[in-house]
Length: 230
Ligand SMILES: [Zn+2]
Ligand SMILES: [Zn+2]
Image (cartoon, rainbow, N blue to C red; front, side, top):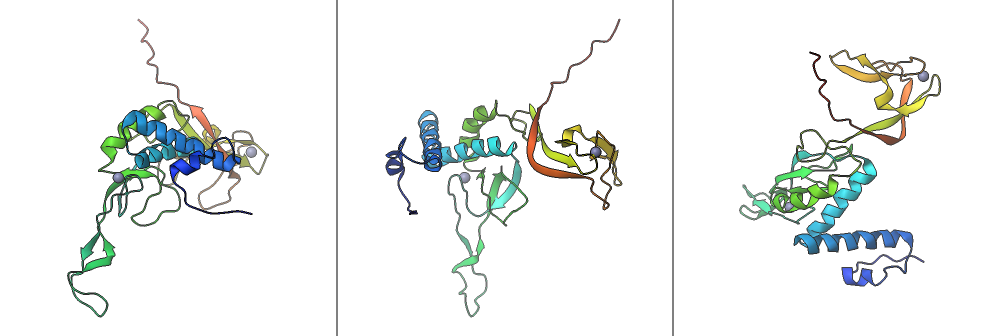
């Protein structure tokens, strides 16, 4: 029989070492948040977001760093309320808070995926808590095997993440980084050719090579400047 309840951190910690794997996983995250909060003087709620970000990066192999507008910060819980109703209607009175019109503010979405909701982020922080959170987060991601966007200059850029691929022509299995680049119609190139049999993915045409589950992390070698021969 299963139960769903909300418990305080102290109560959850009582189960430490005496529970199923899923609950223990939650407890480990809580213990990390408490340790980070203690070392950094971040509020526990914000330390929990730091733990969330690190585990998300590890699991997904990458983070995004996109500036967005949100109505509530998932990290510090900032909420600026609603704009007042501008004109009275049957349902709204001028001057009252307009619940269809929340005040939005700037934030950074670190976990942007295919599915997005307007003015909402799952993983990230707003401009108010960023100066507290980033100095704690950055040292923790320096050695992570994950890809961070180039424009996030303070993040490390040691790894690149490639989606795993399979060629339906010859059965080759590998990742996008091993595929041969083709010229795109709109300029530039894209990885579109099987390195083994030469089958191609053509724009709007047949897809011979398809994404399969999982990804591969490839270490980026630092650029070495070749010495010019005398
Ligand atoms: Zn915030
Ligand atoms: Zn092939």
